[in-house]
Image (cartoon, rainbow over all chains, first blue to last red; front, side, top):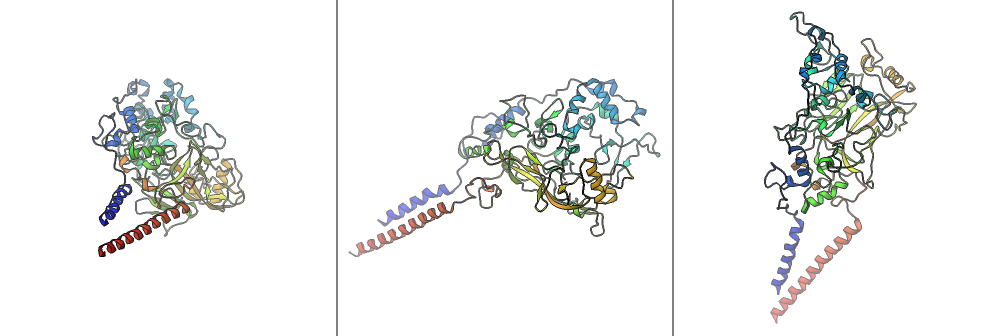
Length: 133
Length: 418
């Protein structure tokens, strides 16, 4: 009879123990989507990682430029002239070909130092913004 | 701003002095004709040189980390002053510092800034004052030409594995930002400025104009006051809907309390808000005691004779007068210093996944989210009534078990005696 009491107590303990321990990690890996993922590492097949890795790593890096600026004559400045050159001169040369860039850039906060939408009259270092550093 | 500062790739194009204005002029070295002597800048050990204009102009390409970093790593007047998650170590970071921007050699993805701060027609994605970086949390699948600025853009809204514990983590993505767990600390490679007392400026410390701290950064500077730097900083957490509220020099302040110059907007019941990590930079900053507004002091001299500038004349009154006049704002002539905060959302320096915060960083009595009081958090919060009922149940059960056991024991003994 006493053995039954101890048995029940032991059973209760055995049932309670796993509840108190952290759940074991999910052992079964999801279908592999990721090239180069560490085998056995389940997180590498997490959908968020798989998506992002596919988006960024699947193709070889593409260089999207179609012009070698080193071969533009206008960018070979005279050595003597270089001694007195100012950045505006280079900018003017750039804009000679990139004829929409100035207008685009003049609308950006990097040029205006003001909020571009919202409150341009208040926000921005060119307006009334204040910081503490 | 000119084209070169963002597009040149030689890394030799430097503005002078203090990274702004024009490059250094060409000064020939009399000892070596045809070469430059360099122009020194007081307070810095290195000399500045005029650029090789042909070389820098021919090198242009899409901006690299170093192009953006020329300004953004040094905001606030020096390396790692302004942002806790952007400093010169992010020029070539190891994967351990940032999984996305980390170099290929270190196993990272070698992202440039414009990989996420996507651009079109010179517009660069990102938050601008009260305008959030993105209006909607859309992935590239939902909007392939949209800005890639959010974590969700590439990682989706259920980034973790389904099933088991990971399911529970996915349940968090509508309330907790990715950054909250995946950027456990900021300023992990070098210390960032956390405290700045402008009221100590103009004096000397131990008879010295500049006092260096243990990590080689100044803890006092006559021009700027006293500072405190911290490394591996645990962020502060606030609800954030992607927008920050801003105080301008025209807005009235309450100098009897800490003045929040900007403040994260958002709330627990807003479906667009997430719990987000922030660097909070605290500082004693000058304000107008009569008009009760913050002030803009004129710090950097217009020219070498301009002693209205604080950094030349060390007179706050004149510096504030000139600064406020420039901003078109009135100044009473009486200034004081008030404790202020300025917050920066922490979003760079994403740590490798094995360093993401464990559950108990928040779900425990020592929770990092002690300040987030609007939601019930298991492990951190308790209901006294429920707890009491539970303990009554447990104690009652124990007592019953003991009594029952004793009775069985005693009756067993009796049966034996019979």
